[in-house]
Image (cartoon, rainbow, N blue to C red; front, side):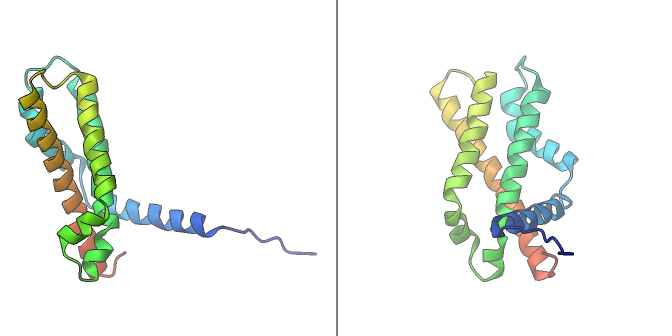
Amino acid sequence: MKKLTVLTTFKEKRREKQMKYERKMLREISLEILRTKVKDFFNPYLKHKRQPITAIEEGCLDVAIEAYLLGASYSKFGYHGENVEKVKTRCHVEEKYLIDTLYDYFLYWGAIGENDLIHESFYMTCEAFIDYWWREGFHKGEKRYRMRLH
């Protein structure tokens, strides 16, 4: 009788490995810290709004986690000697996408006023928020590489 073997592709194996790494990285952050940072960054824009804050907060949490995982996935370059700013240029497109997604999410909920100055200020806040979580993921991922936990 012939033995059946399961064939897997390189893409499937790489995706499995990536998901395993992401699960490990997500153990490093807590929901309380994520929520606190959302409030720290966006409280001035949300305190007088009537929109469901929890829905807006959930969107922020999702994007923060994506930024964190993006930073963590690029941490291997930092471990191999590249400085943070150089590594950030590698993922500029993905980072810009996350910033725009967060900004558009707030626009969708109507959480930003009509003033152009407020829009510009808010966009910069989105950039700072994504940068913060990208760097958190990067540094935690780099630490895991140094400790050989990747």
